[in-house]
Length: 168
Image (cartoon, rainbow, N blue to C red; front, side, top):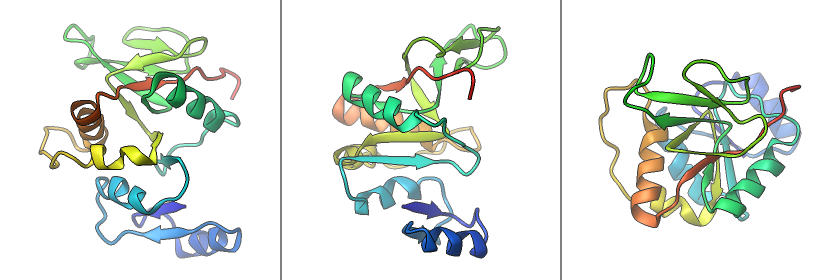
């Protein structure tokens, strides 16, 4: 299933349909709509990718493993709150070598405060993700923080970035 908030062309959408993908076009055109549309998904897990995210070949398997092992929402990137951050008030967790303000997930899963760019979670958690009203934060996009906060406050679930390969 793909949620399209007018980020892909009609031709791409038709090509996906011909390959068996169910495409849902959201007229709301807000990032928050992705969580609501997850209600109609089938299966135990839901995975949502931002339009600028390309998963590694084994990412879904690593994400399902981490979600099951830690009972957490999973993302390919994450943020750790750090009031002493170099540029921002957080450190970035990604599959890169360590460098200032970054934490590497090349060899280990990393528990984080919120995840970014793609989101894998158990479908049964959607009501918890939507349990809080969206709030206005001083960030251009904040639905990732809102989802993590709602999931933690309502169900005690955290977030994790699974180990990923450097070669991909």
